[in-house]
Image (cartoon, rainbow, N blue to C red; front, side, top):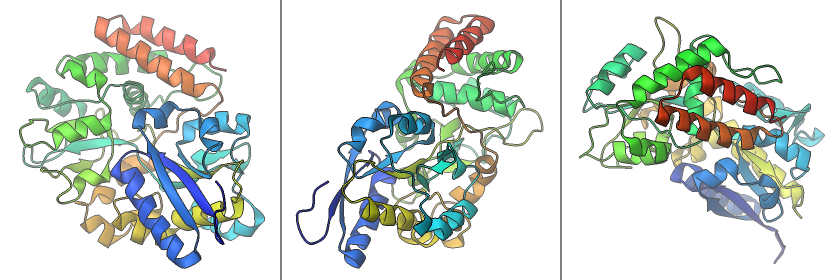
Length: 380
């Protein structure tokens, strides 16, 4: 965060996966060529990304890639700059128009914009076309395949909780995000019991695996994982040559004849540190890298999973990814947004751990759901 020459040199922090790192490096190289502003990127693990205090990162970096459940905490800490300044009003409106599902609004808090979406994801379905002919459309299909040993599920915190969230919302009763009772008891019990049935057929090491670990295993030719019904989509694995087996992605399975609604939204946004010595330069890059043209062209071509609809609508972008964006779009458009209040992040980790404890010990659903609701109430 210091100026060592005529042009400022900025530091950025993102997450450690080609999807999170490579496009930012490529876009920063182009930005250096055009503006002379140099941005160097570091990366942290997925686990750190989901839990490491943003306030500490803001003291070391000018640009930080975050996910939306942190916004309540980071605004309370005062460590990020609001991005909705008058000089970028037209650009901000364009980014809102280009939102995929609710991704743009997830970074809006207390009537200010704290990050700009550069990557959008939700729990979708991954499947192997060499093992099955089509993705599952119903949970009956999933359970049948699970009985044949063809299904796995990432259950490492916080992903088990994300699956509970997605299932309750798909049942028509999404968890509440205010101070009311968090999980509807009837939907929570049904979703929990469904996870019990499903986890009877998956490997126990799934409780130690995040989506990247599951997808890495799935893309191994010797594995027989044909379907992962709930997993955060990673477009990297649908690129030819990324891994030995090319995966495909589709909408989540549903209950009955329902729609693929309620998936727990993920993705990332780019934010500017309140401690940056170069806020204007950081802000200008943020708006450019989140823009439709940058996202559709260089960002997508460099292995990114864009957050702008211009990329999701692009025939060219879809043609290189087995129609990743077209095949998962319905799930994204009707995704559910997690709580974002200050106190949610610690609850998310605790609740995932408690849920896994209940599943491992086959505890009664009503006991576990009651505990989750108590813990959520205490998070405020």
